[in-house]
Image 1: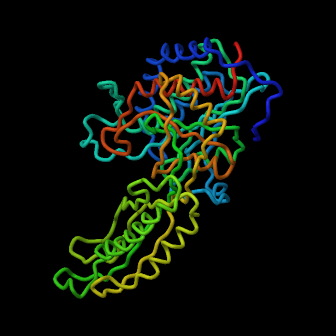
Image 2: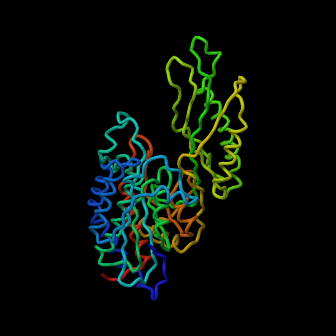
Image 3: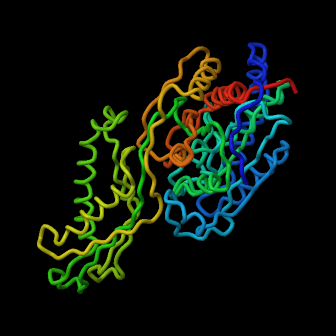
Length: 439
């Protein structure tokens, strides 16, 4: 499939004040329905490899709106041919990307991708939540649940922003692809698969939970598994053995030194100078030993580390592996063998340069939707799929979305009035960027 952007022969009509008001009113009129749809999305748990039910819901929602549908299962072998792909450690059977395409009768406006991810991180122990993470409860103007903020509210906003144009008696003059992708939380392979399938456009908007702001720059991320060997013995003679779990913590301490060296370099990286701690090493998962009464012979841990834009994943990985190769013993003189293998993200960071036409269009839309408030931008030390469009297709990717709290934590929530304003802003952005005509 090829969907390259094409310059319109003649420009569509202007986005008049009357059209703006009609769009804004249409968002308000359908907002209760939008909330109900978002709640239904949250009630479909879509943790990794179990996204199918939520993707069914997205597929049906797009199809009912008359979009031309495409759905395909991710192919690990095909993805592995792209150097930006993450390492796959799970079965992709039933792991699908869904794309719905709106095509005008005559393409006179600029094209757009509305992207969002359907996958969510695990919920953790449910007893630690105030209520079930899948209840999608509303309390004091916030919608609760795993994925409510990250990023099912944004996925729904994409659809209902398009609805608002139709309800306002308008139709976009440019081609629009609405993407619902898996794997954003672990590899980026869902969005990458859509790009490899041929879905491109003149701009991309991704309504991740970004505090009503635009992301200016964000880090790259590498996932890896660290394995350390020990020397098992009976606990009665522990000193004659060597505990692999203790050894792993010793190795992680050396990686913490690398983390701090990279953080000390932040002044050399534009937009990161003022962040407190942009490079974070996370010890996310640990497993080791075979028996409660045996000194552990082995220990494995899954880690995540960030890297600055401009630093290649290969460079960062070479520094990590060189450090590990240089560790031969712990502080007590015990011999250590530490090895790392890549497990997921192998992604580089990016910067969105200021002043693009797409950003200026979003700035105007934001101002109109937020009662004259200017669009602010910020730098995030987290991963975003926008890097795929920027790095591999040269497409400006605007990551911009609602206020949320506790994403990846207990009692994740998204502020509904922020969702309303963001939906208005997206709708106005579509109208200006793609152009609109009377339906």
